Image (cartoon, rainbow, N blue to C red; front, side, top):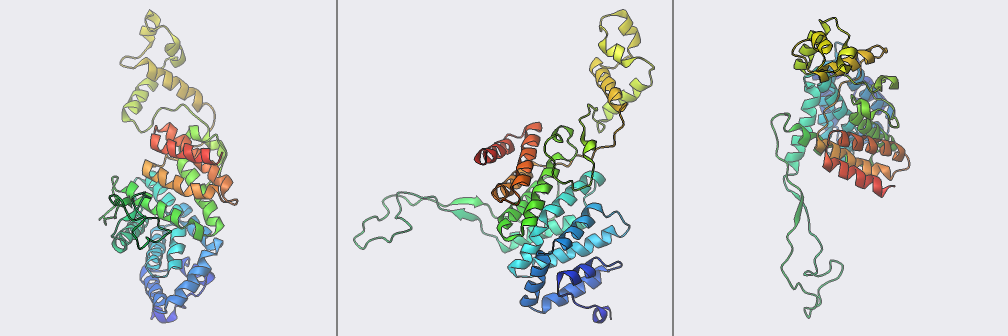
Length: 382
């Protein structure tokens, strides 16, 4: 009965009104999307083309995944992700292009909510895993290429009938550029870099087919992934923030690590002793006054850190965003896409900001493979 009353969307505005409507049930959305797919390839292509060129639709979907904190967030997550997955496997190439456009925002939302809530968002994880497994099923063969060799005839000329320019040596073996993917049951800390890196590389392969605003958005996401929660990396040129945070929140502070229970326990012990911590830290450790003033079982370096911590707390500031874990595989996939964006006049400036941010974070975390890739890219566009 619900299916008969629901009008099938035919353009971006109608699809947006349908998906973003309050109280939309998953079964109703699944039924409507199934009816759209049954109408044929032409209808899917027209609707995909309309949505792909609609930046307002992309902005609304992005705002939901990044900022929606309502009680119906999980229900809307399930509806959106079900639509994305069903649309990806609908068949036409433009339908896949539409879904691929949202890969950077899906991955950013997934990683930021994972860092904030310590639990992966189930709908986002399901759609990312489903698309990865679908590609692994549809493309079981490895991607290979054959290097040029003087032992083989030129590919631009035929072999003469008298045998001249015929192969004179052993034929070169093809090189595997990308190994075949195997489906996985779930995303773990071990498989997460592989899944996210693959999806970002797929996005990079589609960059030429996507609208310019999608390329600019990708550069902003890459810069924000590299900088979120890393105070030392916040001093460079800014990209538009995805979270709407004020730039003043990104000052560098010499805080001790709040996630270390040992440090927290030690700091609580230090705070319970009414002493002048700055005097203790600067005093001669061999002096009698320092020995009498210093609390027992507390290392002097910890006292210096806490003294700095107290001085930094005297200036008002807000809590900075949580750090987003970024494996090297994900960073290298981001750099691969940014290489194309650097050559685009509309996204070149944003791409340069993102590459520098990734390079700074790679140096901060001592990741030589990412640092070398970023340096090579920057040297090519210097």
